Length: 390
Image (cartoon, rainbow, N blue to C red; front, side, top):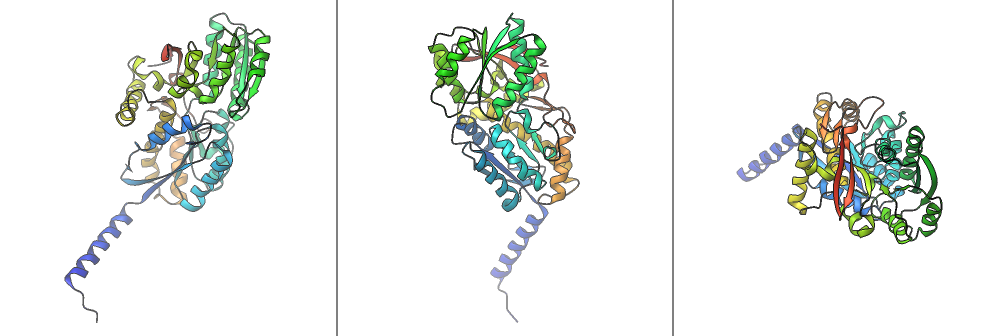
């Protein structure tokens, strides 16, 4: 018989206690793929910063966040998603930063029945609904909602002919389709369409072709700092008309890179960008809460709408977890399925970018409270009008 000393007995009891505690509290695993390097780094870095603010516990469950860089590359994003579902066995995926990467991740999530919350903009990430997209949700406003804001503003100010310079990727494709649709509805003519790549160093040819069409306004469809290049080129070549950008440029790096050439830009944006200028509302309260949390750690005027999309993904998951826990434990297929159902059942959830109400055919759930029209005035984001805010 083996004799047990008091010290060994105490150690055994301590190990038993830890083991019991671990089994009583299952661990929630969240895989997060972000574009923290590459052309979309100015979007991905504030998202990664925001992840450091995420809660360490949700509904009594400890949370492990596994954060990977996808280098703004869809093939890397695919590898990350495969690792999350095959090796890490995560309960939910958050990401990616940009639309091509998010689209590339859908197959892995759907094949393993793992819910995914994208923080990229293209409507195509969740539309049209099908067997794969039933597992996918997204927090940024649909490009349809934002494109409508641009066309409405342009038409309301008497504009008739609009040109477009759009990125040659899924983000550009989605926006171009929506701009053409809303333009037709409002009697606005698309006078010219040119495309460019995120990594291009010159868009002079595209700018000259657009200017030759003599548009009354130009929409630049791009995300992050690469969207500054077409605008700077247009201004350098003497174009003096109004220039519109998408909500994909709503960060201070765009202001820094664009300089004086982006002054006067008009764009639809999420409420977070101008949170302090919003009328009193629950949306403003949640947006300002995020702003305060972020700036306490990363400094004044460092908030971007992209970090807030990541924050909203966390709020969305945090809201759904208690419902899923009532049906299954984290780490199981049953929990992942229950979490998917709970995400789809989201009703009137106020997040930093608006109010979300999901449904079987709507995995974004944003309404007009999620859009404000903004201009750049002397290097500062300035609200033009809050649409639907309350």
